[in-house]
Image 1: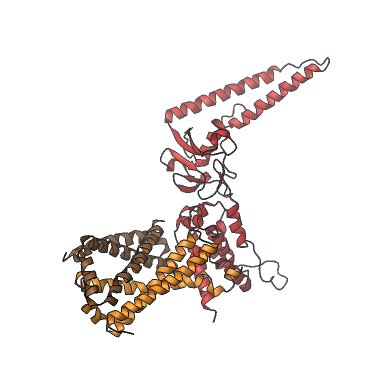
Image 2: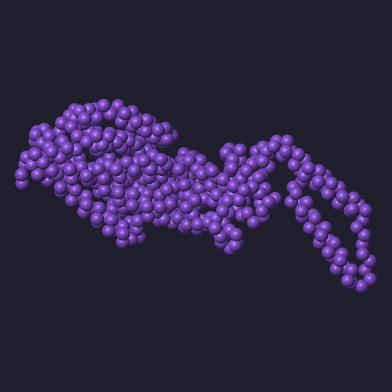
Length: 122
Length: 107
Length: 311
């Protein structure tokens, strides 16, 4: 019973956010692919070009939003796949915290990389 | 059922790629030379180019089927839901094939 | 009666038994003192002869008909019985069943059981698609035995019990988990309040009835739950049948707001509606054509709307 008492924490929120992030990702992923494989060719990518792009505030922000959204969508997806497979009890709690930490670490590292690319040093 | 299976499979591939991608891009913290060498070195390998086409196919399918799922979640077009799955497969194939020249160019 | 060509062989079997009983009591009567043994009257003897003739004729006709069509259907049926030595390991038995136009899968199973192997075990009752007893796994998909034509399938027709459930014997599966999940959604009508004005009826608008109409058709056959990959993996998942039943009541306007909220809370659990991945297999296999996935999707939307409202 206690599992779903605080109903705002029930599966509903994560389900909804998965859809919201999905919509955001359709746009950002398509844009990212387009820019880095068709407008610019992947083979021509170099640090100078990367820095030029990342120095623009709008682009930088988009990339960070992209990172956070994708991490949530992906990690939440993994968690759901595990619950669908019947994960329960302690292993489930371990997975939940483990995945959350992994996600946060990925976002952290991603932002560090983004800053390095933009030539901003903290 | 296959739509669900493929969506899960492509999902795992994309998440796996996300972590790998950030790892590779982390060379940026090591300076311009390291970054350029790493990326350039990877892009010079034919297998990497092929894997990129695969990545495109995987991403496109996940996006198209994802859009189909969003429609289903909104309760729109449920009577055509299996047709829309086949459509996403076909379009994924088409886009993947069409992008091969661009991806393999400059090898 | 004996000349009626449509009489089932089953009826004849019964009368034969009666005749046997009669003769055995006659034998018993012999040991009692001084009671003359009654002759089987010539009338009865004539009747019995005619009956046996008729039976022989019908069997010959059936055999001739089967030969004339050349048609028998090859069935491969799953056998398993933990209590019988030869069947503790699952195996498939082959049966050749004479084909008749309009035959259903259940007809074929009954024929096989009645004529070849009386230990063949499967559930069936109404034979008209309302009791939900004979859901089976035929050539890789779920079907209701009594309403599925045998000629739909490529031979050999492979008949197995529903997947993802424990097999009790042959084609019989343990349905307890299915019923438990159904019970968990409180599948009974329970209005918040009774109507005013001493009215005895609790009226429902035509539109509301129409909305829930399809969801009331469930015969609890279990085909949907056995087709769902998530139900197979996650034991706590309520499953399409239970969620559809919840939908039937959530959407019933006669129950009232409070009951509706309580019902939504049950299905909003992590192992409720959110486990549905819109695989659509349940909708595909439902023998009553209930749009199960659609109903679950509506419940999800209702649940999200309620959640968002918390401020």
